[in-house]
Amino acid sequence: MKKVICYVNQFFGGIGGEDKADQEPYIVEGVVGPTMAINAALKDAEVTHTVVCGDNFMGSNTEEALSRIMGFLEDKEMDLFIAGPAFQAGRYGVACGNVCKAVKEKFGVPVLTSMNGENPGADMFKKDVIIFKGGTGAVKMRQDVKVLTNFANKLLAGEPNLGCEAEGYFERGCRHEVFLEDIRENTAAYRGVQMLKKKMAGEPYQTELVIPEKDLVPIAPAVELKDAVVALVTTSGCVPVENPDRIQSASATRWGRYSIKDMDRLEAGVFKTIHAGYDPAAGNADPNVLVPLDAVRAYEKEGKFARLHDYFYTTVGTGTTEAEATRMAEEMIPFLREDGVNAIILGST
Amino acid sequence: MTVGANRIVPTISIPYPLGDPNTPKEEQWKLRYHRVGVALDAIATDVTEQTVFKVRI
Image (tube, rainbow over all chains, first blue to last red):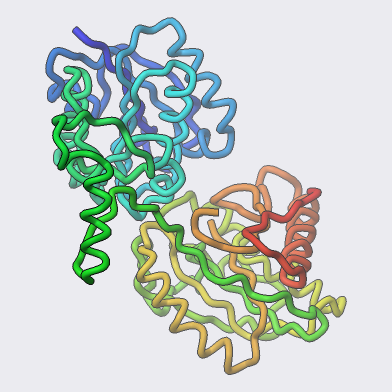
């Protein structure tokens, strides 16, 4: 019987939500939450242990958390390590990537995880770790676990990996060796020439090594601060307490702009956060830790820059797709341009 | 880095990027004032690639 060890966060570990996100890592024998489903779907293998760690603890003390987890695993037998699935939960996805990468490097065992393409962990770790393309939320748990464990079973049985497209994981930008039948049509020279002929004839062809692209915007030139009209934009979900534009707490499609004219700071009780991806206590007690109006005003009074734009712009960043974020930015830009804004401080949470 | 921002100033935590509620108000203010200052200087600095600016507090 092959041995598999799993990793889940505090939520899937069954100890609690955001209020338990500071949970330090620990290990238990056997299954917890979703690792029960993983265990049930494994053939000739079992989940012997599950590691649980709070997303905030992992995010804020990454090295410490990883070192403790490596300590838990040091004396355990393990043929495979599985983290998640993490869906679109950003901190959880990054945690799964970090843990998988560390386990692979330290113990040399295969590691697998699953998350949604919009999860920042996917871009960060897809080159280091096999990450299956997962759903947006836990409602896809059964499906994501099935894909993950199907591949795990193949891997443990020593069956060949058919590559990212066929198996359903994110492209790693690397090639792995496959032995094809020893005939002329399978040689690299023959395949290359066929591709070239198609290209020359203007026919569609598919390269065998696609280079993944990173989505970067051109770098804006520096501005002269003495002429700068600065605006504050935030993905922290900081809004007037009544949330007049009903911006969603997650997967936002709406944004708002709110006047900060004649305000020296954002007062608690006047502004709050409606972001569902983090504990709102600190931001509600002092919204300036999210949108630093007090500090920006201080610099404005000192004359460090020309003036602050009269509104701040806000939406919620958790689970928000790149496509929606791009659209919202494009909708904000005309308002900013109209007032001559030429520099923006975008605060994220 | 992965979201593609070109000028980045580190903050301290997701729920409170610019002021740890477990520290005195004055300390939070110092940190926030410093990092916003770094951000303003970053806007006025030419860069050739994605750049994470250094903070002292």
